[in-house]
Image 1 (cartoon, helix red, strand yellow):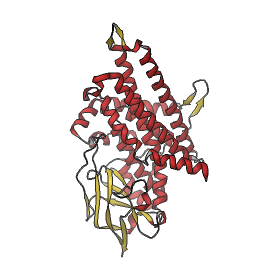
Image 2: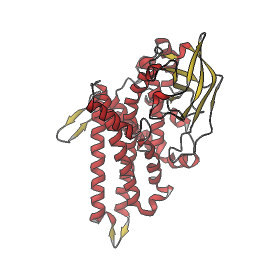
Image 3: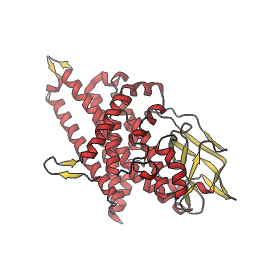
Image 4: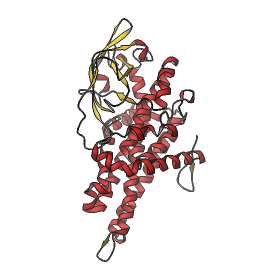
Length: 387
């Protein structure tokens, strides 16, 4: 679905269908996610039942083809969806984003047999997927991974450890990047590894600053035998698959930042209208008005940039990767700043869990790190300008 730029509004004007999707997801998030988000955060509870409720809405395979149960939507549609979900809980939205990225990799690069075997269960969320790239010793330098897969007859024997994996131990499928050959990027391949595979185990869940509602842990492979038919694409294609997935993943995580920041801003607008100081609402003080004006401007600029980058990826523009990096860096930086400023507007109450502001700040901070740190986004942008 193609959005257009409305010169009278100065922003992307979504189609009627996109607005209908946005309203549907926002209504679900307000009803099923927002009322429980603080409780899930405090209890460190992964609400698998509510996550699976998003599948009938088409969120189990947003940009997966419809012959295997996907919605067949575009990247702009996806960022609209993740923005709406994140307004209720950025951690919930990002968890579903990761599942969608893994499913898309199988749909886009997998064989027809793999598509039919895995995707109906993924799009229905009977199975939920994780994505495994980062390792204890390789984050930004992803091609320096040490996890190896050695071909032994009709299976790969996998040994190594993946780090910071969302859904580790809970999810059913792990789309994993492994070394199958010599060299850096050229030696990487992609495997679909199922949870019950012998030799697969999981570390203790990490104690994190944010994203408390989803578990994050190591994924450990100890002589883990993975059938050769679970390899996505040819040997050596893994790094290409990983980078293609991250172009969209960066837009999704930016959308999660935008939705969370908008929610924090909306809460701050309401609070400053009600909170009295020196005989009047604090939103009548010019210093705070200027702060809120800057926040509103940042949100609109971020939204326009994000939608434009998603549109370029939908059109497969030659510079779509650069725009994805630019949008990820800009939107996650601005989103975190807006959320942090919203907390400041709440004063001491913003520091309390009851109001949900400090949770948004904690959840959004990691968005400047994952899917490629914002420093690496600058490297990508600079390379595109100077090659």
